[in-house]
Length: 114
Image (cartoon, rainbow, N blue to C red; front, side):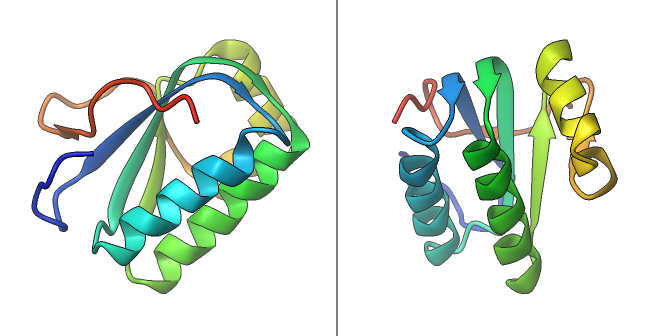
């Protein structure tokens, strides 16, 4: 993780499976970012292959934490099958999902792989 200004949009690339094994570690990571003052966090899901119920739960909890702190959690570059899972769960009505990334962003580095 680099030391960028806390209020900048921070992009966290995620890859692999987003399930019961990996969701808790990502949740810890996002909580640490929030404690460090990062209110605007975007998760880049372009390389996520699977999203399980634990991943869905973690997304909802992270979303609620960001909102409570006055921030925002955004999902970006969501693969079609992951988007279908989010839609079936109704998360597309709760979370902000960007279909294409803007060009001005602060990237948190390489893919987060827990």
